[in-house]
Every structure is written in C-alpha cells, then in structure tokens.
Length: 496
Image 1 (cartoon, rainbow, N blue to C red):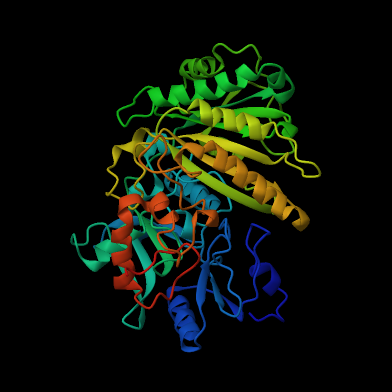
Image 2 (cartoon, one colour; image 1 turned 180 degrees about the vertical axis):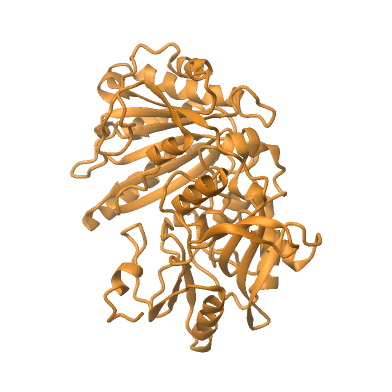
C-alpha cells in the first residue's frame, strides 16, 4: 500500500505514538512465498526493509522513511505442524499476538507458553528477544521451549526461507541461526515467519490466585521508612526464593509497581498457581513485615494498576486470570528502560527511587510514571548463560522503568525525568546497570537508545543486552546477513 491508501498512516505507526515514518510503501505479508517475494522486490528496488509484527517496539526500529515496511500482522496462525525433522510441533506465525497464542493453544490443545501479559504484543519480536511472563518462574523463558524458527534470510544475495532447528549439528550455520533467535532480538537476521515449539510445552495451572494490594502515597510520605522497608522486603524475599532449585515458591510471580507519588498508590500484584493460598499469604505477610502503613484494596485505577475485584486475593481459572491481566494500555507516547538485578537493592538504589518518585516536576503529568519490579529466577535460572542467547540466568528481579504521556510538547520533560531517575539509581556503576555486579545489564525487548547505538565505538547496549554472547551473534550475522540488509539503531553489527 502507498501513501494514498487510507490504511497507510495507521500501518506506518506502531503502538508507541512517538514513532512514525513515511515508507515508500507498506507490504502486508500473507504467506512464506509473499514474504520472499516482498523482500526480493524491496532489495531489487534498492529499498531498505524493516519488519513489523505486533508493532510494540519501544524505540523507532521499524521506522523506515523511503524504505519498505513488511507487515506480518495478517499472518496470525497458531496450529500443529511438522518441523524439518518430521516431529509434530506447535507452530506460531510471526504476526500472531500473545492473545492469539494463549487463546488457541489453551482452547484447542490445553497448553501454553510462558510469554508476556500484554495481549497485543506480536510473537515475531517478543519471542526472539527471549520472552517472559507470569509463568516464567514456573516454566522458564519462552525460548527455552523453542524447537525451530523459519526465517526469510538473505545469504550470498539469495532470498529464501531457512528452517533453523535446535537439533541441527552443533557448529553448523543453521544451528547458529536458531540460537541467535533465542534472545538475539528482532530485526537482525531476517523475517521471522514462524516459531515451532516442542510438544512438551507446559500445561497451565487449572486455577491461580490473583492478589492486588496497595499502599497510599499519602501515608508513605508520612512514613518514609515504610517505603524503604517495602522495597527491601520484596527484594529480600526473592533473593531467598529464586534459585533454580526453588520448589515452594516457584509458582509465584509478583510485580511491585513503584509509581510516582502523583498516581496515589504503590501497588503489589501477585499470581500464585496452587490451590492452597497459605504460601501466598505468607509472601504478602513477608512483604509487609515491619511496616506501619497498612495496605489497602482498590478496585479501580485510571492507570490500570488494580484488579477489578473487591478482594485482597481471588482464585479463578488460569485462562480467566490471563484475560484479567492482559492490558497493553492506551496508545500513547512512552519511554522505557530496564535492568536485571542479581541481589537485593542497595540503600543507594532505594534512596534514588524515593527521591525521584516523590519529586514534583512543574507542568508535567507523571501519574503514569513508575518503576515496575518483576520477580524473576527459578526455572529461568536453570539454564547456563550460553545455552540460549539470553545470558542473564542468575537474576532475582527484572526492572522496567516506564513513563507515558500524550502531549508531544512534554517529550523532553519525560525523557529527562526517566533518564535522571535511571542514572541516579545506577550511579555507583556509571549510570547504567553494569553486568556481573549487583545488576546484570538490560533486556533487549525493552530497548533504550540511551544505551548507545550501532556505529559508536563499543556502545554499552552490546554488553548490557548480550554480555559474552555478543561475539557469537556477530558470527551468525556475518553468515546470514553479510550485506547488513536487516539493521536498526541497536542491531547486531558485523564483526570488524
């Protein structure tokens, strides 16, 4: 479709309203043959291709002025298939959303994959970045269950579909391509048409408990030590219960949402996969231990931070809980940063949270600004750093720094605020979550161009996302995309 098409403006823009571009045209890809033809046509015209699946890229990596956007959003199949070795798999098309995957896998086959909670995120980018969600402590990362990836590649100038498998010979180019898609990020090696998952992917728990409690900022301001105690208690609990051998709390996933004070409440959301709620109650008691500020139950928040139930905890079928927790949020402008944490927070970390989350910024709405602390570890940490391209395999928490707004005039204020918060939290390690310290880098699926861009000398993103796996990713890049057809601001670079 060309600029005159009424669909053009919508399909040239992603979920994050900060990003839009004017491609020469957009091609909706509907099949393998169409993907091959579409990529070949773009290259024959000398036009740069970028690929869009769900459209949730946090930075403008799909933006493509005067190039071609290949849009996979009509390729949304989820079905049984056969991999290159004749084994039956569950196949997920690159344009399928998380909701397509959960709905079809559960209703047709009674299984699921441990992927994200936001329903409209596309599989094409989510999975190849590693993928995690509320079942990951229980079942590992999404890529830990991957068997094969079908990719349109450009090798030696030839555009074709390559089927790369977990069981391809060690050291073969195909095995390296498969491995690169277990955490190497999107937009680096080709067009991901389809992911094949092993038949032994998890069955979800029949029922789960959901809990949502909050602490009013008005009370925390009066008792600053309670804020520190809450954050310290949360981190200490997961430091104790996140090893690969953990059994008691492997089925617990929790998110502590440290909102800006203007939001009104700090929120703790939890999911527990056993029928007996006593362990969940033990966790909640451990988080509140020593606090003077009592928790409250809220049933509504404009920021979507509370469950719509008047209960501290409620049990429901897993699929119903997944529907309850599936918001992707409004289409707004946004900025994001991330960090893996291997140990409980230092005092300096928590002090910086407090200073910035209680800071007033005149004429800037920070009600949708927060530090989200996700529990991590357990089955995620059962793998070695080089087994997949995701090297962070001993963390206990994963943090996402977020801010949302609608007025373009507020861009600079929101970007400056989040950068200042992030820099101060990690001041002891140069303003970034350095690897192999208390922290262990950042998440490629939460890209942040403040961590450097391709072309700069030794940009931090290369080690923060990939650590020691980066050189192997570069070798795969040289083998499968030596012309650097697929590139963006933080792509895998060719070895020098």
